[in-house]
Length: 353
Ligand code: SAH
Ligand code: SF4
Image (cartoon, rainbow, N blue to C red; front, top):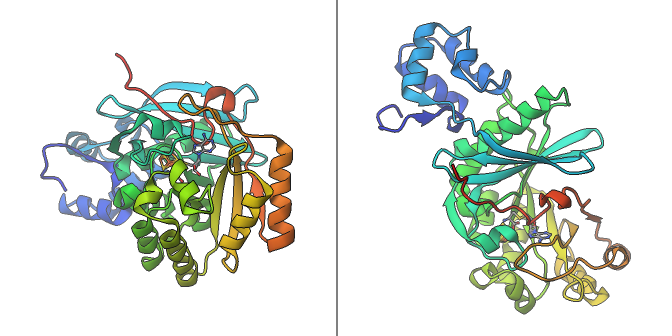
């Protein structure tokens, strides 16, 4: 851990690893506990604020590690005040977007797992920008800490929910994502509950099978959007690699093994996948599975000219699911559209300095 030329990022380490690191330096576990407290209770953004650590410990940390705070290059608020989007600068000068959403009585952070995305979904701004690189576990954790700190400074309630639904495909960056989940779940730190961490995937079948085999403590959302292979492949190119029947087998196995229901996301696009027939097709596809459908009216992006359709279409869709198939569903509240912070609208360019 200490041998590489690049200083290691404190946010990328589990508590046990941090303890081990300090033990190797012959420092007491008390210092490790204090450091962890600074990182995830005090949410400090500077070594200088760790005043209760002996100066020699701080000096060593400063020399050999890094506090991977991601400085905001820009913060934008939606006009209704419910959403704030942060453009955060990565150490290599690239940027990612992280979103804080406020609903009644709770705050949710929407976290990115990659800079860009390789999956190329036609209606998604991140897909339209292409893949730049995976984020490290530390960079994923640092986004959660950033939002938690912003809430703390604004005197708002503690961060309790995160959705891994920002830029990127979390199961294409499995190890870093799940390492980050472990770190933010630590009960001596941010202490986020498994049912309050939602991981959304485009349908990376091997990743879903691995989540199930490892019984990873997250809520799973699967982006479906179409109930036939042909229609799905037209919207989601990844469906060519992982066809719908294989995806549904993996989802059934996931629910069987973990006992958890899956949230199936369906971006509603007028005239494409929002008819009563489509709702029936979803109902038939999900019959017998523990499932909830989340309908997301299409948000605008530069590279796709579909429309979200009218609210009545979503209501009629829900009625078919509920009445004919007893399938619960919700329509996702549209938040932050005026600042392009809605689902599928996150994209970013390198900061010009
Ligand atoms: N890569 C993951 C998570 C990030 S996308 C995934 O695809 O699931 C988060 C959600 O936003 C997905 O359900 C995605 O299909 C949806 N989405 C993408 N572009 C959208 C758009 N323009 N309008 C509405 N939802 C969109
Ligand atoms: Fe990637 Fe998800 Fe966007 Fe598809 S919808 S391009 S998987 S971020």
